[in-house]
Length: 194
Image (cartoon, rainbow, N blue to C red):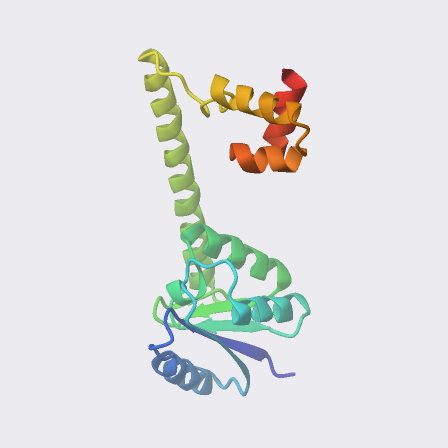
């Protein structure tokens, strides 16, 4: 049974073209003997966007068991962040789907590719731990300096008085929120408290 290969390409603007990516990926697929290839291409979508129609369709096909291998030109054409890449590669591994990035020479079907993935995963976890440590250290320094942490309270006296006055005029909660420039939830919170 031949494997179904998804070729995914992406460019950020309508003025750019996926032709170079597609040409390289098709040539690679031919060299590997992949004959059953399906193309997914997002044109005009930033890599930072969560919602990319063709990537969404690709991942839907993966979950439906229609795809065995995903072939991309580079990581940054596929994933919006290192963490997203690692999480997606983990999910693909659980589904038995191989992932190949042509330019980074990563192929999760090989032992070297799996080692590379393990190293990338470890680096992501290391980065996450460093960020957490820096945040904790920053919070401790701020507390030592007497800086008050947390969101500033929105219930300043002017807003409270305005909400009460608008309620006395028999306005609806929604209209009070609109006129006071606050959420409906905050209107309820203020009126309940005061």
